Image 1: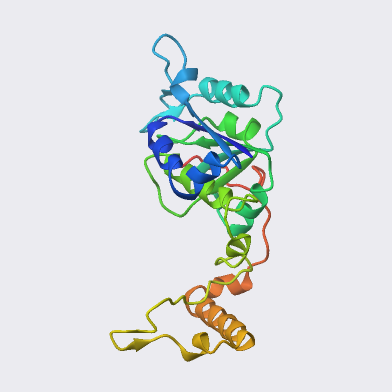
Image 2: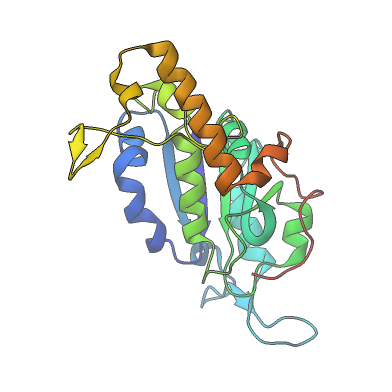
Length: 242
């Protein structure tokens, strides 16, 4: 898999990508990631990337020319599988989205900034719009990192134990069960005896019960959710809050 990230502040993105699972995935050749500075595609001698919004109002909007140049430079043959815009008014990111995006060969991530990007770019050059939550950050660089981490760990070969990702929270719509490790007794608090029983059938049943109860208590909304596909721009909100 190859991932291109287009960002107004690329240094916010580069360093974190060198560490942990994402860093090892690149070192091992499972994934390649290129971070592009939007300023390299800016307009005029000052490489301008933003301008005042038509109709007035506070804030600045990322211009269409630099964004489209950057997107096209990342896919000279127009062959990217998805061009994902990270924005607060996108469709909320779910595990199902990460699962499906992880099966693609080439992703382009566009990190929003300021008051967002020109709507014409969203309408005609973005294929997916995602949000990591109902709050506003200074830019889309951190959400891009969140999406990269969620997707890369699912790429075959990245995790040493492939079954680990399959048992994560949300993979089947439920939260994960409580986890315990040594010592068996810590300051008077014991690990549940079933987990020390060696009876795998009982342990599996305990995990299932705990997952269902945890989900019912903490996230009852998940028990009513249907499986979702990655959101296209036709499904995403058309508002421009960023």
